[in-house]
Length: 405
Length: 80
Image (cartoon, rainbow over all chains, first blue to last red; front, top):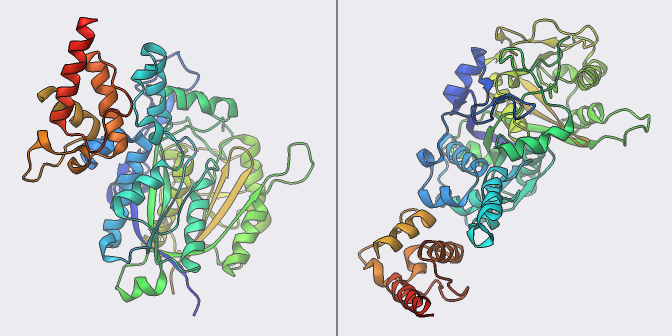
């Protein structure tokens, strides 16, 4: 009998809510958390809007020692991981010594922590740089801290592929479960809203410079002009299906298929890799396009990227051929955290038979033939969902979830 | 000693002293790993204006030994 990967727990730290219930209620209500970022001085940066998790205070969730040693992104990851374990009803000491793995995605690393320490270096000298800088900044820090805290001695890793990394992490979690792992905590978080982290994002040219919080991030809209950045993400408890059923766990759904592709070099004349990622994920899951009930779009809100995504969807599903969700309009793009959060959101949508709305969009562009769910949630029988993510630099990933048999 | 305790708290959060005397318990037994000891060493250097050699504090050092060490270094520094 084949081993399958199912999701049995969700942990969410998002600008619109901490925890499943708060986040999902706000998401269905179409409440946006995008607003001018308080700690960015007006006029000092070309970007004004962001999705900040204003209620997240690391000390509320973690012991002081861990707070001192970690970046905000890791504190969010640790918090979401603990929530996912709790939601799944898993107590790691009850597992075998090597049963629990940890795989996360990250694109900003510990930039906020790093900025603070670099400022100490410049202002006061090298002796004033804290020892924890050595373990706080780097991409694998969140995976490592989660692994240490919960005794995850199974396979561990980190993916760095901008927005695509959350799907890549979950794809790897599935691969590990299929090849013998009992359980993998997987997903991603980001905290890229410090001035240094924000400046690192500017060269992409993809950030919205709007100061209108209601209309700052408008994927597929005629007025699309870039995305709003945000922080937070989600961690998911991925388990082997039979083990989950044996212990009587609630199963949100199965990770049924996954694929990633890389774009050809600019100017090559070859098409972008998103459609190929969708086709390969469908083939991996053994599903036909008609079996996909909703697509959680990458939703870049860049006119060219929106057209490319709409064209890929039209090629696979037909024009307006499948409902498209973009609830990330309420949080901003959370990069590796965003694609992981999209998977968590897709599983909640499947659980409750409802597609959460995009906000702000008023006129879908004529050259984007997508059935975007806007304004109000849409009731729908959902047995599966496709989640897409494109990471700056050419990364494309597609992940399919479906109701577990 | 109280100042040292505050520094350790800042660096490591609450330390565990299960039924033992804080001052005479080695850092490793207080739950401080080598990186925490390094951070404590750096913070002591800043707070007391002394330069602790990198290998002076280890997991086997106790807070009481640390206080004696810092006091000795401060005396030496003051005399030179």
